[in-house]
Image 1 (cartoon, helix red, strand yellow):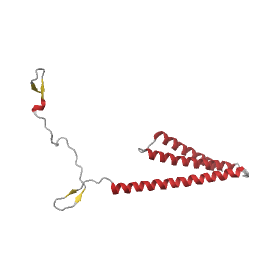
Image 2 (cartoon, helix red, strand yellow):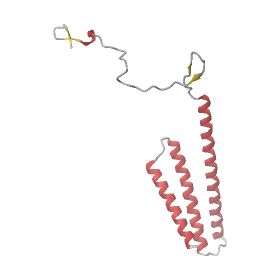
Image 3 (tube, one colour):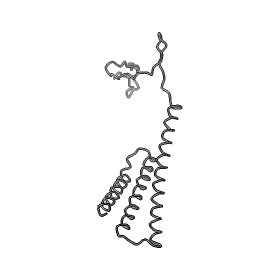
Length: 158
């Protein structure tokens, strides 16, 4: 049993380290993703703490009678609720994610299609590489644009 206590202690410590690291770094770009990860890590820390507490009670070989037995049953009830909540949470976010991807695919911004003149087939446009040496200057500067008026109001070419 001491090995189980050590393993549960390490599990709780790792869950807390991951939670603290996540709270400090907030690795996701969207705030809702960071909140969801914080919630799930908090639930995992709660489950690990409850299991460690139950293992300590069982290791001490206490006679569970009366209020002590109630405490153990409440811990088991809380653990079950945390597990169910975690499962529902994962299912909910996976469903929302799948729905969002489907809606984006259905109603998202469509790329313009190019039609071949001869065959009539359509395909998405191909991005062309930018080459500064072959790019044509479409707004040439005329000599009149380069002329600046001097102090006397006479335009001189720069």
